[in-house]
Image (cartoon, rainbow, N blue to C red; front, side):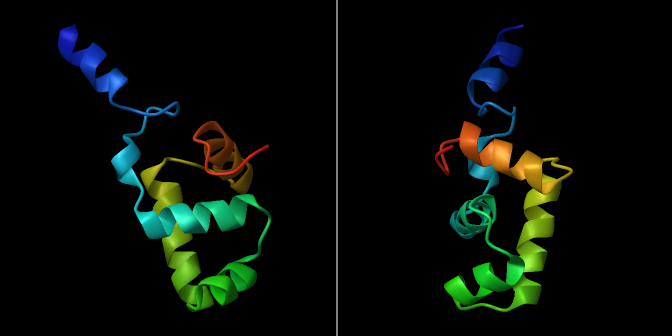
Length: 83
C-alpha cells in the first residue's frame, strides 16, 4: 500500500512520471498546444517536419494520449502552456 502511495506521489496529474518527457519533447508539446502546425513547429525549432512527427508520435505513446486535444489538456494541467 505504501509503495502504491509513493508511486502516485511521484507522478504528475495524468499519472505519468514528470521525467518521462524530455526537454525537447516539452518544447514540442508547448508549440503544438499553442496551435502551431507540425511545419510551423519544425520551422521554429530549426528541424525537419519528419522529426517533429517522430517526436509527436513518441510523446503520444509515452503519455498514452490519443488526440491533440488530449495533448493540449496535458500541457495545461502540467503548466506547459496557459489556458
